Length: 261
Image (cartoon, rainbow, N blue to C red):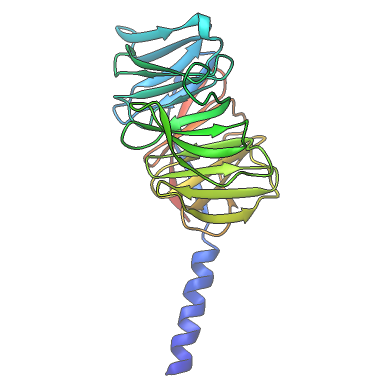
């Protein structure tokens, strides 16, 4: 009986390790955008064109935000649709927007005490931002109410080339490693990273990464990425919201549901 339990455990473990995922098309719609940013849980679509951020649910219900003096938009974080983080790397600035794309606050890292050059800025919890200090090559937590860094992580030997985050965790990819951090200052996991993904997205359960026109997926606590089975071969941008993967091919925005095989 003891050996039977061991065999069953091994079978279940191997089955879990070998689990594959498939993306199934739900719907498709036309979208005229320079860059697709993503969607929120209310089915609003966000995209950019001519350095302007747009939020649209229909042609009759559209909002926009532009700050042309800040340069091109580098990154838009929709984690909290009531406080949207817009990062402008060229001007070293973050703008926080409300749900109608009105400006709430602006953080100019070049003018605050302890000047720093920032190469990444995303939403963290409690009015804080995950930022990457490219001068010191380290991840930091920045409180924009207090205008100061409240937590510093150990410096990295290599600068991250892509990243994703949520309120409590941040994932950085360097040329050789894939690193997971939490909001309390702990490095959760360091994985070797031979694939060099171009873009990463996450929800509460999975991480999805893109390289060329292929997607790779792993559970948040999983040990390795596996290729996602999907019929779409042309990908300009993508985003993940809940259980839905959105892919923009330059003409159409497609929504896929992700299911384990």
